[in-house]
Image 1 (cartoon, helix red, strand yellow):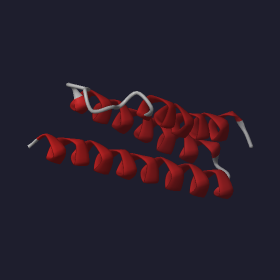
Image 2 (spheres, one colour; image 1 turned 60 degrees about the horizontal axis):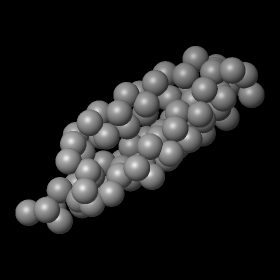
Image 3 (tube, rainbow, N blue to C red; image 1 turned 90 degrees about the vertical axis):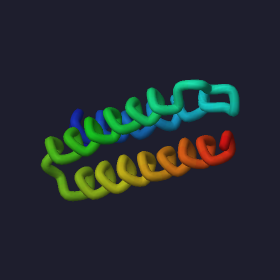
Image 4 (cartoon, helix red, strand yellow; image 1 turned 90 degrees about the horizontal axis):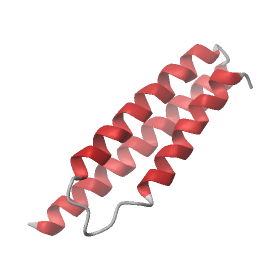
Length: 82
């Protein structure tokens, strides 16, 4: 695994760590979603830059899955407030 593959997986880890700070009292959920979007896009770009098929597959799948999961999490918090 080269440095871009590691960076792609590190973007997933950073997203998961940031998600630990989301709670019921968070006012700006849009900022968290924007942060997840930027980290996911950067992770996908790093995955493609790694030029190894396993890194590309693993990086793209994990980054997209984390973004979808956290989008649904933010959506659930938004529905819970209404």
